[in-house]
Image 1 (cartoon, rainbow, N blue to C red):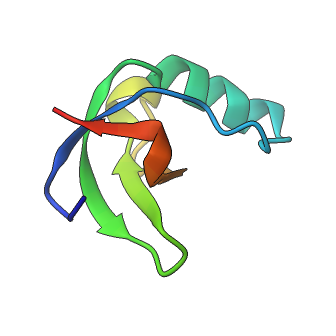
Image 2 (image 1 turned 180 degrees about the vertical axis):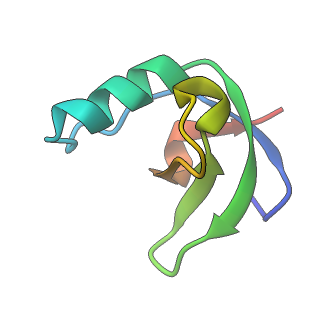
Length: 69
């Protein structure tokens, strides 16, 4: 997976503890996004403002929870 790939969120990490973060992931589940960065620890950065309505909202997702579309 590389920056610019179109991906679908296919799962939610089980280690999330913040209820607000869980809510964002639940709303993003099944939706498609463009990978905007890959972090050093192997997470994809996804811009999710189209789902949340908040400018510059991002989530960081382990690659195993994404599927290239």
